Amino acid sequence: MGKGGQSVQPSSRNEIKSGKDGHWVSPYNPLDPKAPELPSKGEIKAVIPKECFERSYMHSMYFVARDTVMAVGCVYIAHQTLSTDVPTDLLSVDALKWFVGWNTYAFWMGCILTGHWVLAHECGHGAFSPSQTFNDFWGFIMHQALLVPYFAWQYTHAKHHRRTNNTMDGESHTPNTREEMGLKNNVERHGGYAAIHEAIGDGPFAFLQVFAHLVIGWPLYLLGLASTGRLGNDGKPLDGDIMDHYRPWSKMFPAKIRAKIAVSTIGVIASWVGLCFAAQEYGVLPVTLWYMGPLMWNQAWLVLYTWLQHNDPSVPQYGPDEWTWVKGALSTIDRPYGIFDFFHHKIGSTHVAHHLFHEMPFYKADVATAAIKAYLEPKGLYNYDPTPWYKAMWRVAKTCHYVDDLNGIQYYKSLEDIPLSKDLKKD
Image (cartoon, rainbow, N blue to C red; front, side, top):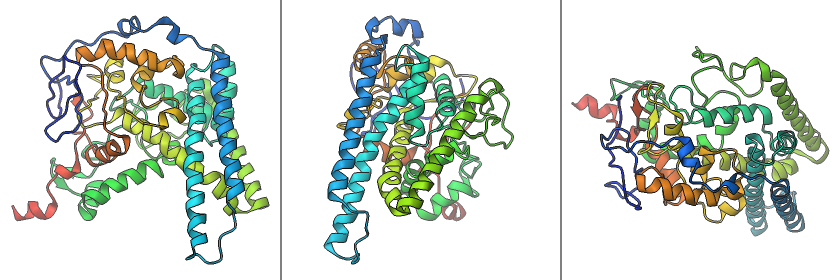
């Protein structure tokens, strides 16, 4: 069956399981001999009301208008209450107000713009409207405005859906192996992240994980320097090649979509040129305050969702020998995001439904989720972690560091469970 981690008994009741430490545990463990048989995609779809798959131009455009009105309102409030001029006395109350004010604007504007990002993501999936041309038009505008290469990410995100939790051919947050983390013979640290963890300790390393994911993770991913799959579009290992989102000839993409990739890259370049002109005209600081601050929060949100919706120490990762589409899709986790569900169109609390049926419009996903939950939960196949997202983030940062192998059924393991080098030497 392959290598794996902790054993988890599947649940047959409508209850939330927790482990010995009190944390949520996925009810499905494919290593358990009593693990339930997985339904087909068709069987799951049959329990969802057909109207959940109906796409509406007007309904989708309403949300574009709603989010845009909120963004304009946020800019207006900031314009009326804040100045881009740095206070002369940096230790004054005015300086504190300036700092808090601009950071508050950056957070909420980034939060609102993540709504636009989700809508463009819907366009890429074809869930925005019945017309893919209409979808691509609006998706391109909204994503390019956020420096996202629309067509390139449309392709790689579709691959993420096709190969969810596949250790070899998955896309985004593909797990590292113990060797890639700097471990030898399971317990010996010989460099890399394992050595960094030993040097700085558990808490700081978890903070480093959060920083790496939420602050620099998105640009590194687009550049092909982190979190991509291990196989090119031809199914062959990369052998050290970089799969970025900008070069039309990147191994990430088949030849037939190179023209689209070029259009996306030109769009991103045009956006950067526009920002450079704005910086030249108005100054670097105003552009940073008005645009770059919110953009960083937007990027943090989008990485956070992908990171948390597919990773937990009790959720399996599958090698090519064990992976199936249904296994990957059912490895998705729904989580509560409170008020941010309103701004982000429930992308995190209805993610299981989204991964099963990405063509379903987001405004029908809560109805579909209720139907899916009613069908899957009694079988022990529905993942819902009630842990607040910020606590779940910290737990994932502390526990989901590597897998033993790329084959079989794998579970994330933590460097916190690896003995320190100094302790091994004493033995």
